[in-house]
Image (cartoon, rainbow, N blue to C red; front, side, top):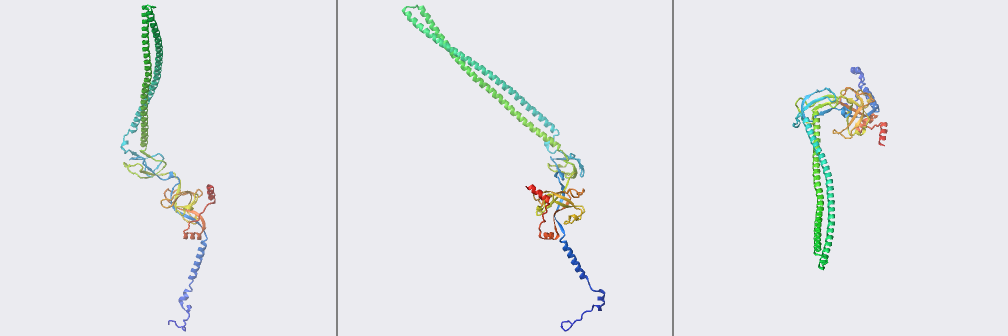
Length: 452
């Protein structure tokens, strides 16, 4: 029964003797499945040798090519209180249009006539500086007059000294003449006494010679007195010359001291005028900052400060403005491993958010809804996200980007590299190797020329 005996044989099953086997027939599913597996395997094997364009994927966002065309926030230059709004969100504004008006919140600027009063103060200080200038001119004239007077006085003193010297010389000659005269009178008196004793002359003649001797003595004494007087006059004239010099030196020093004092006060006043003019200019500019204006044509996208009566500080955000005219570009962020493979002018394909597309990253020519671009800028410093930033502008040789695109929307970029076979790309992906670097021969020659 168990058919374990070698002598017992189970007869072969005759399928034709059963109605069910005759109805089903022979099953061919295994043969068909094997054929399909072989066909699919052959197709996949052949597909491994198809061309594949290597690419680097990176996500980014739309921005503008020029920094002055990107969304900007207008800040409050001065602290103030919001008094009136002139725009609303979404409104198109032109350059110089007023956005809002602020009022003053600092007590030192509350005076409504601050500019006029500051101008009056400047005018008064200017008059003060002018009066000091006139005083300097008067002192200059006084100094010139004193200098001229000093020259005249010195000349007079020198003349007086010359006169005293001539008087001294004349009196000296008189003393010499009187001395000679008294010597002669003494000799005559001595001879007269001798002759009177000898009886040669009378007593009258002797007395006459005595009178002559006394008169000669008186003349000598008078001449000596005049000589002493002339010497005193010379000394006095010399002293007067020194006194005149000292007196005028003192007057000139005093006048020059007053001149320099006036000059110092004039310069100090002019410095105060300059400082007050700076304050006036600052007040004028500050008054102009009460009205916040638009720096360029654009759209009011968002009002950060709302309502009336709200106070803002210096540098606080007021509104966000999107420029009306801008050149679109895409900011892409790539990994550091892919960064050495990116060069300026390299082609990039984009898929924009909200724009229908069918993408085959390895076959960019068969993709639908993608747009071309070229790398125009590469950051040399890694960002906070650990990736490098690229700036990609539209490719002028490709289809134009959609006009409905707006700054800030997302984009997926494919930086196109070398053309390889699919099996090589799979092998590269499994091993984690970077894509092959593809360089345009024209770009290589350009770079070599720049390096030289």
